[in-house]
Length: 394
Image (cartoon, rainbow, N blue to C red; front, side, top):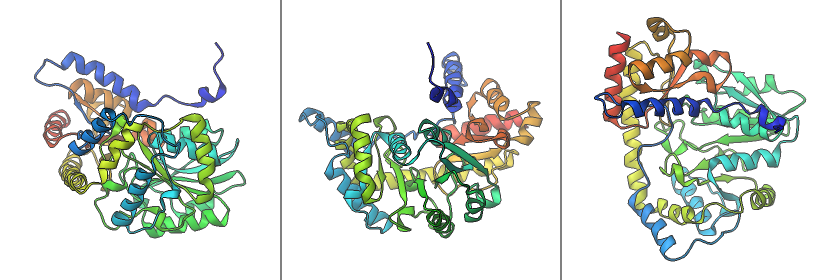
């Protein structure tokens, strides 16, 4: 059977390929005294709070399971609008909010609405691999621009201006970022947007980890800059609803009908049950629980990253958000006699029973010396992982 060239351009999602290998090995270790510890997947160990679960049950019991509008329940869009006002101090009308089948659907819709064949989108290297694949699936081309620790692994206005070419359509940024957990300084983001606007381009910002910010310097939405900024968000990370597949996007008013038309054809609507459940995310009791969990994620970061640094797994920039550690494993690779983070990750699985994600997924050759740890697991698991890593790397 002939496969489309479009599908052929999409590389494997190596994060999940490594996860499959880790799961297979974990089955063999399940009944031993050293089971696998998973520090590879960006999924909170917390599940949706009781109020959210109860709201889902009520929607099923009450038969509230029919299709909604393609843009989502108006009540949910209004709740999201209210969250922007109370959390970030920005006025985002519900009419600009489109609820989607996860942030992935939002990114797909944005790319299909704005990218033509041959358009180039500037992105930082490293960055989340699926973001560049969304661009490719829309017949565009992701242009990865190398970044440094001094730049917090984020793009600068100067680099965007220097890289802008005749085919450039815009930028796709992430703040906080996966895999680094670092954010763009609001002043620099404003300068980037000014460069983009000067060229008549688009500024698309992945903000799915914005709720999990730990530094007031960075915990601001890009939507505060201009109503032409497009923001992608999700109920997966801060709201702990990964498998519910629910997200949203904020777009300029003129783009809403375009996105709605695409969503009608591609998705019909987001999950109705998930939408009714998400209404409860914004209740005071739920927000209080999410904030308690945010503090727990910060505590895990504050324990784990100094421990990595002490072992020679250098994290060059302390993440200000999300739940990742982007560590240079060059020294550790020498210790274990392996070449790069791909081989290092499999050595950790085999010899320490700790699953991590190699840097291969997140950019060009430079990322091969990095490995991404997820601190979304419990403190007890992180402590055990540190003990095993110390024993292996001593």
